[in-house]
Image (cartoon, rainbow, N blue to C red; front, side):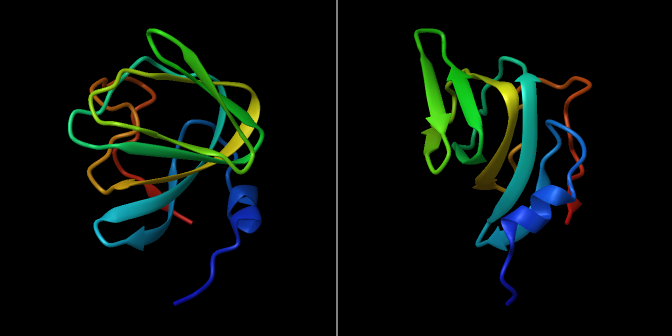
Length: 119
């Protein structure tokens, strides 16, 4: 058991859209990631996904509306719901999701990260 300092963990990340594992909780990973720009439309067949904004602002686009998540806020996206994360400026996000969750969900492309680094 060791405490995790998120500021220190985020300082180790130099790339965007590449989640890093910082902990494990039951059958889930606690991940941190820096986001900037627009991701890809995708959904997760089997997993709910939680975005917890630590620093900055994140927009999650859905087919019928956009939701802005600000520092200290989180959003849980149910499995099967198509979404598009957008970060106009760099944003630091913590994710808590099942270990099976692939960052690009049902899409496999150059942004897919199958083997996550631990920091």
